Length: 232
Image 1 (cartoon, rainbow, N blue to C red):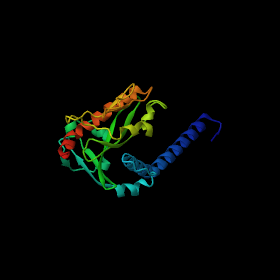
Image 2: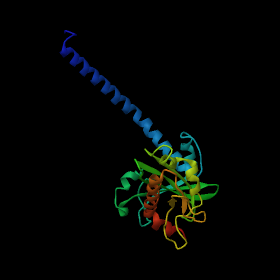
Image 3: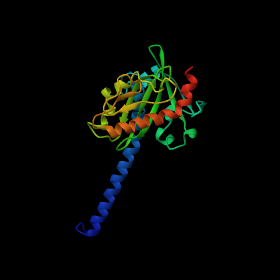
Image 4: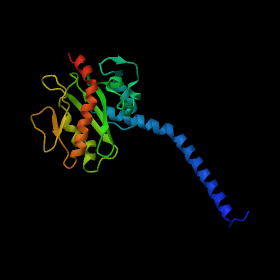
């Protein structure tokens, strides 16, 4: 075959494309179990972080077994239903009507006290935002919280994933004195220091903060019946 011909060039390029595509497909298939394992480790790490248990991603596997004493799934009526909490994909559940959702709960025992961890997920300014909120035994007081995001603005909205922003949530309450679910207000210009339901917003990150505020409220609403049933 004439190696200078157009047909040779076309055949050569086609064969190389097929070889590269096959190699990439094989590599992706081989790496998929490792990637999935890392995703699960990171999820466990974030769940533990919400209750103040800091550990590496690899350490999270054993720490999760040590501290998470049970997991279960409920519906919006606060009733236990079949399902595996860890395997629930919140993005899919959020597309359903509230009455049809599977709602995961993680029970953690730390220093002799029980905490109840629920996931939160919603839309940020540029992409999804998510996290976990750990409640004390009254199902109202926040013990800890952790947030993450896909594409918020560095130095502004992306600060929701930092410890300095998350720390003030500790000790705040999601129910008011009348027993109404009010969640947490992320206040632009500064939170009322006497309020149990407000934290400071991020300067320059107002839109992300308001999106996060909405995410928190909408994530907590489906659990309201469960919280009220168990806070007796």
